[in-house]
Image (cartoon, rainbow, N blue to C red; front, top):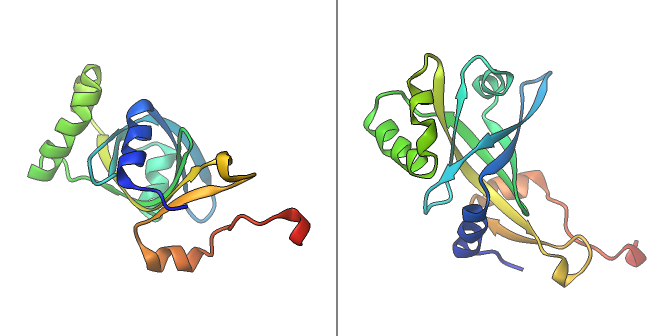
Length: 155
């Protein structure tokens, strides 16, 4: 079943934490981070640049994210500090987490943006292990050959 922007936004609004998986070629990391989002489904989080997740992102920007019943594959990038873009995207984050505004003034605390490539939502109402999909990058989606629901009796 197809998933739409409005459904995804409603789910994201209910969640405050996402679980972010990163890797370089050797070390994986899984981190819980507070996040904000925009109407284009971009996700924003802050982190110190010397953490394992940020060191991993410097080598490999591909991420996997879980937020509630959503699974997201995307590309993360550092938003350049002080740029017009940074100011705009910080406003999005600060509206959701006003108590964290001072944290961004600390040295090496950066703002990151995740651009989603594909989003899945678990939807067990249609059967065991069913996932609804929102494909935002068809080339990426085809390249990963994602799991498709099947009936075990058919194997």
